[in-house]
Length: 152
Image 1 (tube, rainbow, N blue to C red):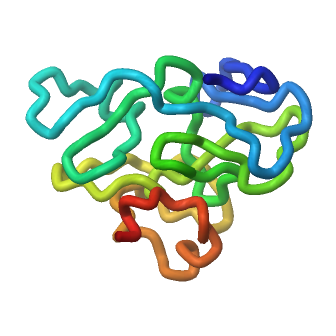
Image 2 (cartoon, helix red, strand yellow):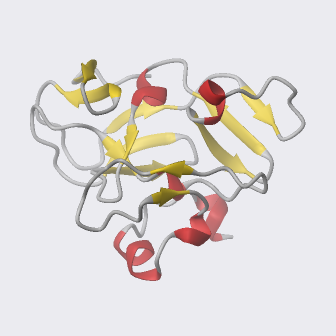
């Protein structure tokens, strides 16, 4: 279920990215992770899967059939996570703006997965990994947009 107000474009900085084609209201669903489910014992893990899934419980990840897997990380995102698998606008997003979310809003893996952060924002943490890496101040700012399974 991809929002019709967004599309995937190619950028020089990241390759593929998702952008708003028109204004998006706070609370609108942008994408849903509705594809195949992978568990920790899956033998076919590769970089494409690792970098494009969302964790929704201990040892379980899900990929998006649509644009969800093209939404980039930012340490100052305009979207967050609701109902474990939905990417939702945390604020009004203006036409032309890149759609982003903070990958640490869902991750608490045991595999040690990490990525170098390329967002370039003032609050960039330089490394994307587990929810445990997210500063307490950031967690407060994201209240209501962090995957519920991490807050149990």
